[in-house]
Structure formats: structure tokens, C-alpha cells
Amino acid sequence: MSDQASLGGLYDGFEGYRNVERADLDQVLRTGIVALDTNLLLDLYRYSKNARMQVLSALEAVAPALFMPAQVQKEFWRNRDDVVRRVIATNSVAGLQEARRKALAEVDSWAARTTPGAEADEQRALLDKAFNEVVGWVKRGGSGLNLRAALRDVAEDPVLGKLRELFEHRVGRPFPPDRLVELIAIGRQRFARRMPPGYMDADKPGQQEEGTGDFLLWEQLIQHAAVQRKNLLFVTRDRKEDWWRLDAAREPIGPRVELINEMSERAGVGFFMAVPEDFLAAASAAFHVDVSESTLDTTERLAEEPEQDGPRPWTRPQFEILLSRLEESGYPLRAAVLREAAQNPKGFLPRQRVYELGEYPKGRLLVGFTRPVIGATRDLVATGSLPEGLEPALRAHYVRSGKADGFVVPRSIVDNPGGEE
Image (cartoon, rainbow, N blue to C red; front, top):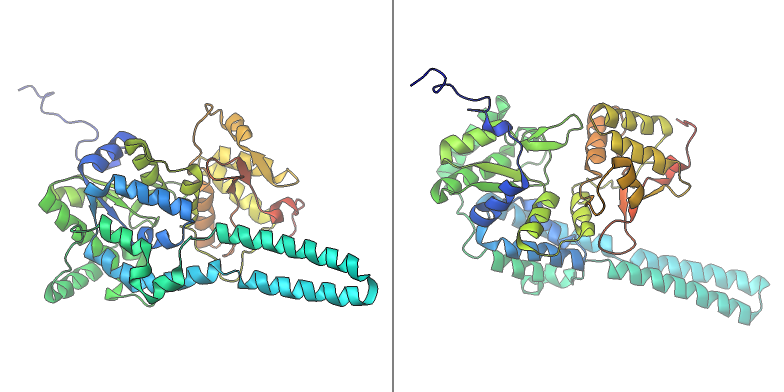
């Protein structure tokens, strides 16, 4: 054997740095194992009716590959009731009904002093019609679920019914108590050495299992993959560095190489990861199920942390900080879209103009287009360069479900062109 024949290539032993192609995801969806993180299951309560049906269709298409680790099962039941209660509060039209009552009372008070009865009745009718249209719009955009009934009686919860069908005989068994104690100790030791996954959440307050939930899930994934001898895809909306290799805008590139290597060494199989919108897009393409661009965009937005007290407006200097970060991180197109949208009185940039700026082919999907903006904002907040709670700097805009007709920036950016602090 010649010396040259015994030599290796650049990627030998470092295969985890290769880019994952759509064909790789397609193959694991058809022949491998697909495990979903807890939030993906809980998000089924947060979707609109149409979006939820599309997501469930995608899950049904990959059903033979599905596997639920026992840790995901535990976290689902641990958080389900609280998530349902929050969705009920979010979807409530009680605030609108109270606003209608107050508005009609103001009209009555004003009319009693200044306006003839017939003219006042006409204005009341117009106001009532407008409120009815808005209330109807909110209700149509809701979950389409009777969540109050679902909270009282699990038999009234169609989400649970569908999940039960999908995961029948596909849920892992929990670790025995003595093994669980051992693994929690191992997890804490790994966190001290910043070994992925899970160390980013290790010291958050209120954690169960001493903050080792992600590590326990990981152990269950390895255990199942080793028995099945199949490549495994883990789908999560967690975008932190203890699961992912990240680019300059703190956006996922691929799984941490340590995780790929550990799965290979202990289970003898390949390990892949995807954020939910990429998983749904791949399932849609592989199995020809309908998952619209608006559903993918909703899936991406669910990963954003809601601001409890309402979003904080942008100042111009803050906006410029974001633009600079995007350009430095290799996303000049996003910066250009933000700049041009901010110059529009409505803060809007049409889809066709995005194609022109990016020199994209006609018909290209724009799924995930706002993701680098979200990631850059999140990273700037983490480093203290931007304050917490800013409203999203770029949103896809929809006239109806399907493809976005363009993108919008917040009014605070449009209305504040001069650099107010």
C-alpha cells in the first residue's frame, strides 16, 4: 500500500463540520428517528386552527419515525395546563368587549348633550359594527379550540387526542430512580466543564432535576438510537450554544460537533438537528403535505420570548446598531431590507423588492428570512448593546394565509428617523 493510499482527507474525523443538506433531512425523515422537543408539542395550542392542522399533517407524514423521550413526556404534562391557561388569556376578547361598552357609553354621553337621536343612533350602529368586525377577526384568528373545556376534561382536548394517536407505542420509558440520581450527578459534572447539551440552563431559577433536563433528554435519545441503530433528527426551537454551532449573528449552523461525535461513538449513528420551521419545510417537500409560508413564519415567531408589559419602541441609534451587526455578520441583504422598509411611510417593503435586492429567482420561498434579524437582536440584548423587550425589527406581512406579500418594520423606526435617544 502506498503512503498516499493510507492518508486521509480534511474532514476525516471531523465530519460534524460538514453542512447538512436537504437530502440528509429527507433521508432521516424517511428511514430514521425524529424526536421533537417539548415546546413543539405545546405550540400546538398556540397555533391558529389552520396552522395547527398543517403542522399535524406534517407530523402524520413522519409518524413512523416519531419518538418521544420520557423527559419530553414529563415536561409536556408538567407545563401543559399553564400553557393552555395563557393561551386562553391571550385569545380572550373580553378586553375588546369592555372597550366597546365604554366607547358606546361615551357616544351616549356625548349625544345626550349635542346630537339629535337619529344621528346618534347611526353613529352607535357604525361603532357597534366596527367592533363586531374586529371581535370576529380576533376569534377567527384564534386557536379554534375550546380550551376551557380541554382544561377541565382531557377527553375534550383534540390536541391530546391527536398526540395520543401519533405517539402510541412511541414514548420512551423513564430512567429508574437510582439511575436518574446518577445521571443528574453526571449532568452537573458535565455542566461544570461546559459539555453540551444543557449547560446554558443549568443555573436558571425554578429548574427541575437540578437543571439537567436537556442532558436527561440527550441520554434518552442516545439510548433509543443505540437500540434502533438509526440516524436521529432532533427538532427544537432552542437556539442556544449548548445545542448548536452558531454563526456570527448567533443563528444555528448545525449541531455542536461534540454532540455529533458522542452520538456516533455511543450509538453508532448520525445525529442531525433542525429548528421547527426547517423541519416542517423538509417534511412538506418530502411527503408533499401543505405547510404554507405563513405557518412556517408563525412557527418561527413562536420561538420569540413574549414581552409581558408590551414591546419597547426602537430609537434610531438602536436601529443603527442592529444594522451594523447584520452587515458585520454577513447579512447585508437583511440590513438593506430594513433600511429601505424604514424609508417607506408605512414601514413596508414588497416581496418583489426583496427578490430584486437579493437577486433571488422568481418563486423562491422566503422562509426564515427574518431569522438572522431575530438572532442578531437577541445577541445584542444578551451583550447589553440593546435593551430587552424591543418589538421585532422585521416581520413578514400577510394579506391572507400563504406567502408573505412583503415585510414590515415597526412604526417606531419609521416615525423616528432623526436619531432620538
